[in-house]
Image 1: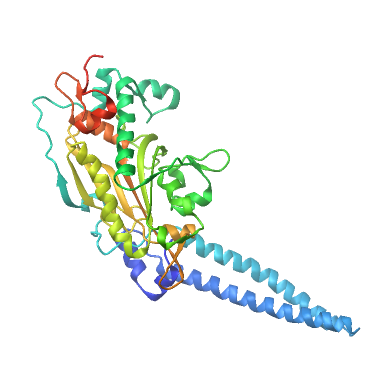
Image 2: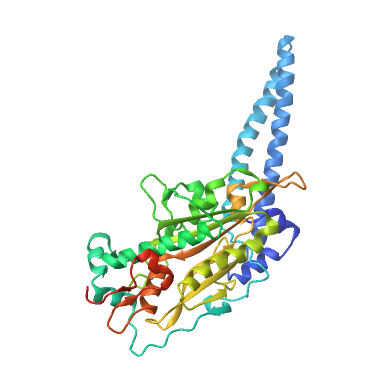
Amino acid sequence: MIDINFVKQNPGVLDNALKNRNKPLIEKELLELEEKSRNLQTELQKIQEQRNIFSAEFGKAKSKGEDTSKLQSKMDFLKKELTKLTELSNQAKTNYLNLLCTIPNIPSDECPIGKDENDNVEIRRFGTPKIFDFKPLEHYELGAKLGMMDFDKSARIAGSRFVFLFSEIAKLERALAQFMLDIHTKENGYTEVYVPLILDQKAMFGVGQLPKFEEDLFKTTIGSYLIPTAEASLTNIHNGEILNEKILPLRYTAYTPCFRSEAGSAGRDTAGMLRQHQFGKVELVSITTPDKSVEEHERMTECAEEILKRLNLPFRTVVLSTGDMGFSSEKTYDLEVWLPGQDKYREISSCSRCNSFQARRMNTKFKNEKTNKNEFVHTLNGSGIAVGRCLIAVMENYQQKDGSIEIPEALIPYFGKEKIDAGK
């Protein structure tokens, strides 16, 4: 959630940010709603104070046996005013907060201004796409030839955008997840966490999923939601807490299934595993102090990049434009891996810096040792990385002419052999 005091002290900044994000300009409306809510709250407090004064006078008069009819009349009037103002104040506060919580984070000045993904800016590349002496197949074609990937069977029992993985392809998916977790926990200093896969409304609000993106979530019959990513669970670990500055930064990682309705993706990536309702992902989350936020963002992105480097998968890193950024992010790096079957780079990881946006919604703070004041922490999240998409990338980049798939050298200790043989 954005800081309303920042908006007041920096006129025009919010509208400029919304303009850059291609969103409606609502700064004036927001400030008017906030002022109305604040004025009604002030008026309500005055009426309450008056009623308390008359109540005290009423008590004294009654104890002395004096006539209290006039005081009673005033108290009855104030009671009616209090009831009316309370209703108006509550409605005004609701209107203000309803608008405030739908406003996205203000992008950093480091972000390129643009309308969509076409305006993202590439900042570096790793590796060179392999030139095949045959037409490379897409992952679902390879999986079908191997008899280890089946979308028809899953569709019969679960609907579209699900998949069955069998035998060595299923094993490869598991090996990738274990490989990623080992690097992040043993080398990158992340603590592995087993997390809840179902969260309540408060937690989903905290990370910015609610109320704006409810249609993208799977809702349970008890009003909770399946997690769209482990970010939601990991970032909420310290919801409502005041942390000791000495323990920051906190770095967490988790491998979980993720669930997304893909409500806004009709007709996109309908073939294969690129856009599923259920997929596996290793997530990275950092909680840090504001002065370390930028540094932590670069570090997290390098941790995600290292996974692809160890697997020797060609990729590029881009900075997202203001028109392509996520709701809670102030700056995002996307890693896009090369898929020879599609002959293009596709997103495999997003690493986002959210400043105090999520912390303000979760009320997560730390005690600043220098000022002895409580301040909001900064949160960061990133895919380290999407396991399903990494499986796709390994299959397509390491495919052989006979339909077999070589295993990246770094992954062999986890997979147990050097190749998935064709025709098995």
